[in-house]
Image (cartoon, rainbow, N blue to C red; front, top):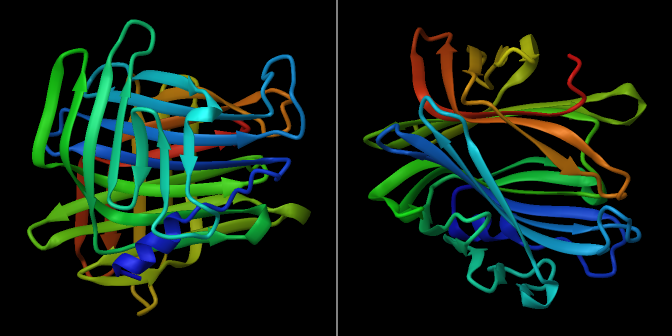
Amino acid sequence: MDDALTHARLNAVYTREKMRRRYEVWFLRCGLADGSGAWWFRCLLVQQPKPTAALPHRRYFQVWATWFPKDAAPQSFIVDVPLEELRLSAPGHFPFHCHVNESGIEEGRCWGNIRPQGHHVSWNLRIHSRFGVKLSDKGWIGFSRSPHSDASFSGEIIFDGQKFSGEPLGFGVQGHNCGYRHRSYWRWMHACFPHPGGASTLEALVYDLPLGLTFRKAIWWHNGVASRVRYLQELEIVRSGSGELRWKFSGRLENGASIEAVAEATAPGIHELPYAKTDGSGSFPVTNASLARAAVNLGSGETLETQAGAVLEMGGAKKM
């Protein structure tokens, strides 16, 4: 799935205004090419069954910006945007668009201009890629898609007067997730290994399903070929309060070759934020490291490594 039409389909809006309970988010992770940090941007739409004291509006929209500097603590900013400013393409329509005042995302472009808590963050990015993938699709229950899985980003980001710009500026992923609720737990990683011919990527997702079942899927994109990782086995899961985050797993590619991967991060590069539940009953913790290390070992003897080109996220219950 590597054509422009596929990218557009994977970003198409799912949520209808009359739906009573749902979240839908478009996001991107851009690791700066010079290794100095990574940016995480999110456009989030939430619809609750009814208003609550904590969240008085049943339907709301937010723009998120998080800066992960090298060797320093992340900084996160969240801005609520009035719904009357929201301009959203029709469900299923492509190419899609999601615009609010000075921020938005559409096929191949993402931009924003927010002034939270005395700070000023603006960005204007173009997105280029050759590969997109549907990692999980459970219909009304939810989905996880990466319209731009081997993304390179061009343009500029300005944070309190500091300017980041480049052609390319950085590498990473642009994703699109949706569901009637977040899962009780999940583990997700995406690693990007740029090379002169483009990039190799590994993306993996594990989460709980009803009846005690577990969803597991990983996709390896290498030398222009996508392969599902079969027989995925989790070897190590660390999400500690002492500042460690690690996920190690193994499996076999479709050609029978073995693959083993690890993504990991340590404080201060680990960030935790509360995510609101779609039923309005409260929140739960999500831990994210968008400047993580990763390594992939292939049965052929080839090893790919990155010191800052991965994102590792664990959500929901903290007990592992």
